[in-house]
Length: 149
Image (cartoon, rainbow, N blue to C red):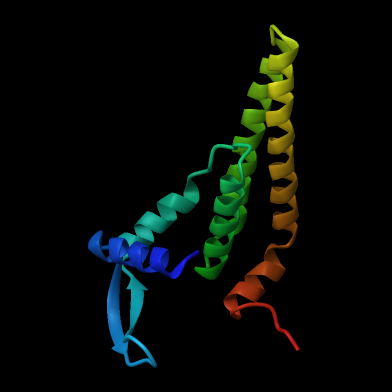
């Protein structure tokens, strides 16, 4: 993420009342602002984390899934619940795509359904993998990252 995008996003969050500036510290360059989430921000974060994303064969979805797991863990929320809801959403989409493939009127339509199914299956494998690593991931994100020597 570019710095400009971070500052633009923080300004929008402040404007929307989801975060607030709680302090300003001098730095080598511009002053550094410290932000804290507001009660409205906590409500909004909880709502966003509870909403499963629709599976799509795009890299953008993987970034959102990864971000949601990381933010849930960093904020002490149950990432397991998010992954369970996401798994349910993916399985529902797989059922729909499987039916579409079965009922496809052309080889091209069937092949497109296969393409989408394979991407949803890959997401499901990642969801299972992430679920198995939650304790380790939670420890890392709460301790500000993996220990390096």
